[in-house]
Image 1 (cartoon, helix red, strand yellow):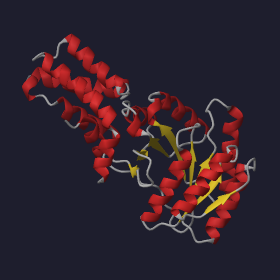
Image 2: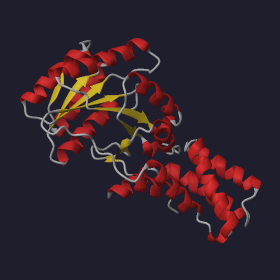
Image 3: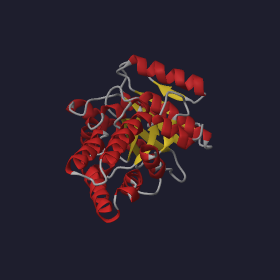
Amino acid sequence: MGLFQKLKEGLKKTHSTLTHEIKRIVTLSPKLTREGSDDLEAALLGADLGLPMTQRIMAVTKKAYETQGRDKVDIFGIAAREVELALGEKETPLKKQADSLTVVSLVGVNGTGKTTTCAKLANQLRQTGEKPWMAACDTFRAAAIDQLKLWSERLDIPITAGNYGADPAAVAHDAVSAANANGCNYLLLDTAGRLHTKHNLMKELEKLHRVVGKKLPDAPHEVLLVLDATTGMNALTQAREFNKAVPLTGLVITKLDGTSRGGMIVAIQQELNIPVKYVGVGEQADDLQPFQAKEFAEALFSE
């Protein structure tokens, strides 16, 4: 299955709900009535596209109705085009240090899929010719260490893992040494899930990043917030708070295949201007994809 088809499959729930509502509204009247306008707005907001994006699509749609009439208006095309323009046309690939190790820290609340994402990202990097190393820095959840070790064995990607209860910063420090000693060019840190409201845990994450930065200048070079798409706009609150504590360089959106609110990607990127770098659309090792605005918009609104 091609990348676009995987994305389209992953967005099936969001796409189905959106297109069903839009088709119903369009067929009701040759004009965009007040009721139809309200219904269309509700459908867009229901997909968690956010108020700014919804208002933008509504403004262009209303103008098109006034100047062209229903038969010539393609609401799906308008919506896809506006989303693509809002998200930006260029991909934002993972950073890569020219002559040294690139450290990528994966952060987020519990249950978003950080550990799985760490393994999938390592797998994708290796498939593109890179040499990744993983670090099990979630030492609070014993299952997280075991889970990443299983992925390490399954994908044959090396790992640094401490014991349950060990200092996460010490694990990260040792992982930098190990990755460098083995000639790797990417180190992926799987950090513990933490609520953005827990001040002490956020401070611990800051400490981990400081320790890595002392070991390797400017590290971590990427801080990716892993967000669960099924939480909808709650993910925006998480992104705001994590960005205050540890400035984020990108987002990874997981579980897009399990939600009808995939538009939250647009809302978050619109408000915080943090690029979405990857999206997860399934359980397999190759189901993490680089994010492409054009393909996302088309998968969201294609008839």
